[in-house]
Image (cartoon, rainbow, N blue to C red):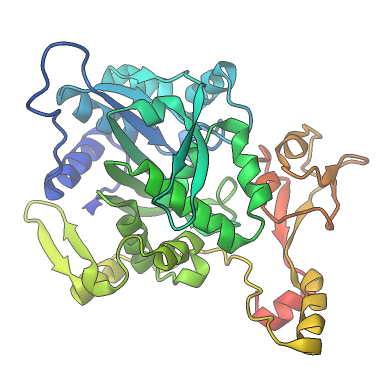
Length: 397
């Protein structure tokens, strides 16, 4: 971890350098590299949608520029890119890179923006469940994949950080396939961590100088944490973030999935934390957790993922409890006052559960799989996640 009070270029550059030094991370290309093309490093930020950096929806461009500059000086050809929610075309990417400041970051670091929208199928037989993923070719072909996430709340998974950010390696609208085939939070989170395991970034960095609390990942509030964090294992980074914010696996579903899979640290005594600065300090185990807790903000509004796993039972009781589930499930709610009928939510819904017949869309709850893509991708924040009264009564939500 590096303390970083703001996005002033000198502070960010010093923080990134300190993180790399503390991890003893080999940023330089292999010594055996001979004449010919330079090895490629691909920087994968969180670029959910075209929003300006001040909204804290995307990784701040100064973090990208500092990271790209470090890798460029080390001898890499640096590419910057992402596959955001929705269509994956050069035109969409051009608008995205301009709005989020990535074009400026690339120019400042001598890096190249990736407009490669080709993809490939990759099968992994080493995962707990054999899977085939359609991934962005430029990311897969790179010599070094660097995962640079933004710390935010998330309506489906509780938080989005290192592991969740790698869902953006899935090409374009292929993301909707995983929402359809994995309709529960648990099974979808298993897919997310399997993608992270498959992509295995060489380094994961988290922009938590300004994080997002409340109605993330696109319409929450900026929250000053003043931190940059990094790890060579994305699951270790997520574990540390959970300690920092006092979030348990139940409320951070990709952490829960990583623990189920055996990815990353499984206990506090497997955690090591270095607090960088003039005199770097190393903390292990319980001391590492205590150090993270000492940096916890006084308040941070989290989102609690839906969890109906307590509705168990056998025989007739099981049938009764299952019949209650529709009355307890969260659902998207649309604001007539905010919606401008842009139809982004209709295009984003993987199961065509939305129709536009009035001022704002209506949702067919018999089709809705609660992926909340509509809430995540709405450009105006016209969608909120609503909990039924019975769920609030039973779970205090």
